[in-house]
Amino acid sequence: MNSLIKIKNVSISYGSDVILSNLNLEFVAGKIYGLIGENGAGKSTFINVLSGALTSYSGNLILNSKSIGVVNQEVSLPDNFSAKDVLYFLAKLIKPKLFKKKIFDEINLALNLVGATSFSDINFNKLSNGMKMRILIAQAILFSPKILVFDEILSGLDPKIKVDIRNLILRLREKNRVIIISSHLLEDLELVCDEFLFVKNKSIVSVSENKLKSKSYILKLKEHKEVLLFCDFLKSKGIKFVALSDLIFSLQVDKNETIINEITKKFNVLDIKSGSYLESLFEEW
Image (spheres, rainbow, N blue to C red):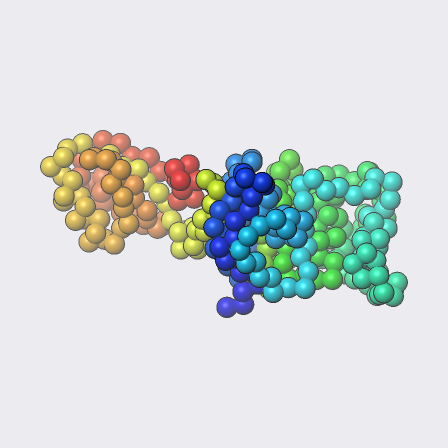
């Protein structure tokens, strides 16, 4: 297991205001991580620490990569320059001693990978939102960093462009990178991420891959006399559950399971609600 980021007991504060507390996380090469939380929860602050833009934190942050590529929601590129010119300027800042030909070789490689070669000579202000996002991703992958961090890059894009950018992100994973994408919308990330990190209550909780395949049900029984039999039945089937009250239970089952049909036939169920495990965790945590 090739770990590219290790975070041990990290806390982030602004003065006496604690933003995130006691974080312990590990990021493995070849995975896409979804960083999810409401606006103001601390997603961008966490990203700023990873990228080095924010250094006021306690604890240990270990990065096993020479560089990190970042696309920040606040960042744009100069309007009156072509995308290729701007990429050249940025590349020169990163590696000032590199020969011009080698820099353009690297730029062309990045542009080709993101599918932006055909419009790289057009001024940035004349590009569509989807084209601009491809150029921003191209600058992040210059010189092939092993860690990529994308902050809210899917926000505000139309559905067709979102699909294109998701497919691009999946291609970038093939280079055995760690990719972290932040969003406040679950639906933006469910189709591309291998693991999810929920930012809430000054903490970040990781959701493992097997849980991503699960579905959550909130179920209410009609009669108290069935509770013990119901619990024994769930245990016999290996179903994870939590009693929320005397008659209300939260169940986590595989999406392909037919167990809910069995339950409704065997027990008097008064009410049942379903959703993805991710949705239930995000709403109830």
